[in-house]
Structures are given as C-alpha cells and as structure tokens.
Length: 216
Ligand SMILES: *[C@@H]1O[C@H](CO)[C@@H](O)[C@H](O)[C@H]1NC(C)=O
Image (tube, rainbow, N blue to C red; front, side):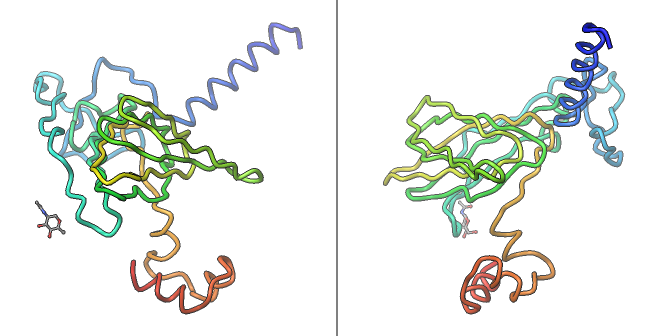
C-alpha cells in the first residue's frame, strides 16, 4: 500500500472504532423522542418536528437535592432521553449526585459512556480502576469547582469524606449511558449466583457470601 492508502486505512479504522464506542452521530437537527413509539438500537423514533417545542429540550428541578436516605447515603438524579425527550440522538446525558456525610456512590461502570464530574458543593474522594492486567487505581480528593473524568466502562466510585453534604453534576457521552452496580451484579442478581462460586472467586467465608446475598 502507498503511504497515503495506509494513512486512509488507519483513519477509517480509527473512526470506525470511535463510532462503535459512542452513540451514533445525529443526521437531523434534532430527533425528539416519541414516547409512544418503541425504542430502536439508535435511540427512540423521532416525533413529528412540527409538534416539537422548547419544553422538549427543558427540565426543571435539578436544584432539588435527591433523597439520600438509603444504605449508601447517595442519590443519582439522571436526566437522559426519558426525562428530556430532546436529548434523543444527541449522545449526551446529565446527572446530579447528592451525598450525605460519609455517603458513597458505590463502585459501578457505565457500559456506554465516559463521564465528566464537577463538584458543586463540599468535597468528594473519587477513583477509577483500569482493566487487566494493571488494575491501577487513579484516585483524588476534589473540592468545589474541581473536575474529574471517568473513562468509559471503567469501574469508579465517589465518596463524601466530610461531615457536611456534597453535590456533584456529571455529564455522560451517551443518551443512555447504562449503569452496572458491582455489588448488585455480585450479590443481587436474579436469580442469585451460586454462593459456592462467589465463595471461591472472592475467597470469602460462605457466611459472608450468604449475608451479602441477603442484603441485596
Ligand atoms: C426519603 O427516602 C426514605 C426511604 O425510602 C423515606 O422514608 C423518606 O420519606 C424519603 N424522604 C422524602 C423527603 O421523600
């Protein structure tokens, strides 16, 4: 191959892999989700543009704290194309995360999105871990105004290490980032994973495994 052909081939395979990793690029100015139509692999069916108005691109109420009265002391309020129909086909979503003192947004991953977070109030200890074989932990304590990135599909968490509440806003580059909670996968699947398997994999006492399975 001539060098310009190799360059073109490289460019094509690069753009192909980028397209696979994120939502499809839009081909209309907008494609506001039709709530009555079933979802497709590239989002929802567009409703008639003549029936679209500004409220399709609008949400009110993200100033209200989420209810953090739960076992982990945090609450994610996610705005995806279900809450804002005009997000459909645009490849983005947004969330507010509230933390009570000591609250944790547990280890999880987004199968379809990278995430960028900014602290609006308080302090957060955040981290993500890379994949095999390094399993390297990147962790940092963030203050108000600090920004941190969690690469797509990597397991990550946030914790409020202080005695006062904390709030973060995040953006994700998918209209439907998905969320896989590690503890729910391990202990809370339906039906439950055979406890003998979890006992061996995590090298835990069998009582600890059955306790974990009862909690979820
Ligand atoms: C918050 O959630 C808890 C537990 O589900 C519930 O008991 C409580 O009423 C909720 N508080 C508000 C203000 O909704």
